[in-house]
Length: 230
Image 1: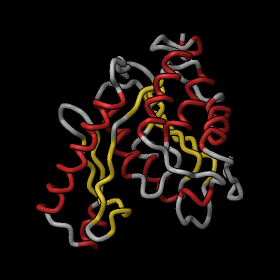
Image 2: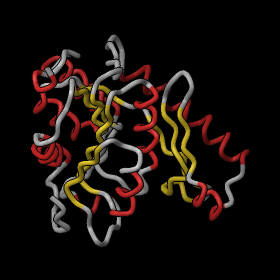
Image 3: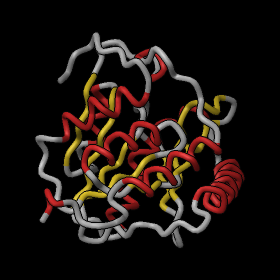
Image 4: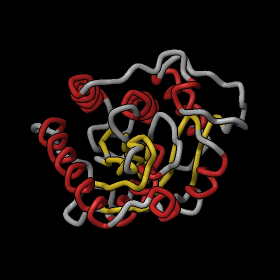
């Protein structure tokens, strides 16, 4: 499973490979939670293979000052939003409270925009008592995945499994302290970004996310318990 030479054709290919790996994992009433946007095509394949419902965790990275791609932290949607701050990054970049508050406000506004757009008329899936499978197209620092795992635990998920195609070993070590189980196909010795492990890593737009979510809801589990968890 841990082959540093793995290259995925695209996110759907990664999702099919992850679904095969998850076939050996005990999953009680699974529900698949994608981190949009990039995690959605990966999660669609997993949800289809497991005949499980698909939902989203609306989580946004809090970028560092002057380096927005560097994760200072992350925030997850909810009545009481789950916020994760990487104190090492905060110290090294000099991010003060005012910067974090401004950035947090902006990212919460983006989460609200996505919620209105993505879930028009769609019922959300309650993770309480179920196995929540958190899916992304890969991890770098893992800040968004960590926030998602904590949020789903707080919402009552019986068990949280993190499933990703690729991530550095040090990030996985940290996430194993958060999730009940971690499934990762590729832990490369040299990690220079998630996109380097895909032949096709084009960015998705909101319309594609909405289409994929609605198609998955129309054809998959529709919130019913999976027979594997019966």
